[in-house]
Image (tube, rainbow, N blue to C red; front, side, top):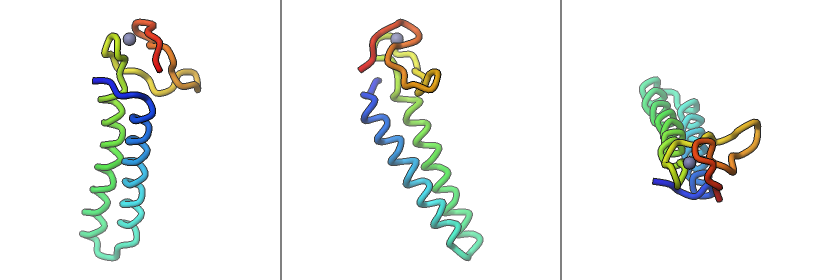
Length: 86
Ligand SMILES: [Zn+2]
């Protein structure tokens, strides 16, 4: 399954950002178990954001995973099949 770059980026940033906020909240907690619990949730959100991109940021033509950046620039052409990406 392939999602457009804009949606991938939006969901990725959203999950990453909420994960960071949750981690920040965890740091503010005083109870050790709360810190660990909320902290784990934040880590899970961050992991999810990367998992989401890995799953859905694929070439629509050959379905292979695409790198997010190449030589510091966003990929515009699939490195596997040279399909032009929108
Ligand atoms: Zn391709």
